Length: 260
Image (tube, rainbow, N blue to C red):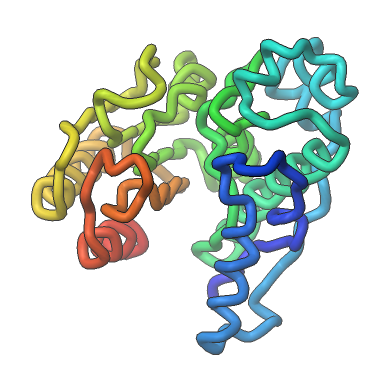
């Protein structure tokens, strides 16, 4: 059975009134899965990641000032959340969740984290609601296994995985693939190993054929030992930004193509 990594803190963050980040969605996903018959034994809770691990991948100044609340206001505005101890604890737990998911995938074949995909976080700053890049940590965690050398990161969020691309740009053992809306945040794109920017209004058929071609190319060229998939739901037609217009069929097909 595929492990599902979840912690209630994923949805525990006090935000200003009318803040646009839907923090409640994570517990909503868990509740919907339970309602559909997923047993509680499938859910695995992570413990917060420590500074020692974070310092392995991110700058000392950034880790220290962010976790202690000393990061300047402009940098926090770039992140998009007001600083609080609750934010840091939630972030530590969520990032640890993706790392745990990677570890469980090595044991069971695949695993899912009900949050994560903080692909706008760089080594020395955060952006776009992303504080620490869990995808990069997960890739490096998997590479600690003697069986894993090459890791492919497939990012299907509607926004380019700019932070992931930058972190992995000099790492030949990590291949970054990003399929995203072209005229969309971040407006200053980084260079992934394979970037495909789609026009606004791209629908199911074009998206799925593009995904098929991109995955075939990445798998043939890189031959990964493990794959990390960032399944951004903001490609769906009901997303507030309406950049891409995948319907339920297209979105489920994209997920199924990856999982199979």
